[in-house]
Length: 139
Image (cartoon, rainbow, N blue to C red; front, side):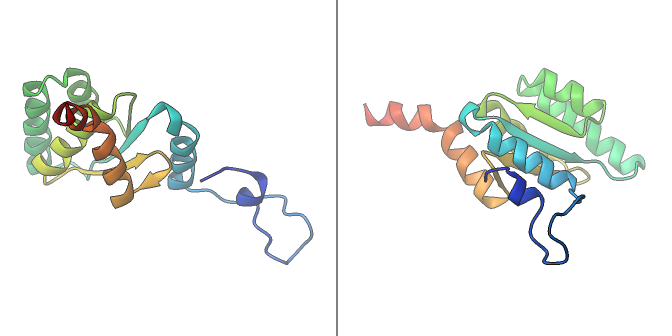
């Protein structure tokens, strides 16, 4: 994905030159992810539902689990209910993404990676996170 003026202001045919357009958070995060693709930056968009006792229990359990895996900074940010987590290391992003997705029923997460979202982002992150393991097995 490339961010350019044509992508921001698509031709609607209504007027010659659009003066305003609308973006949502996904457009912005996807564009940032694409712009930083060579840096292998991963973005996790955290979804915290309205709080109740069950959500707090799930959040506390997830924070404990993240600490147990050595992801202390991730645990701290999630305990503060940070909305976006930005990772520069694909392996740490993969670990955090899977901990959040698999160990917390009350908290949701969306992954953005190398200009991709959803399953395509997961596949790309998985490949980059496990690349060093694959190279070890070849030797």
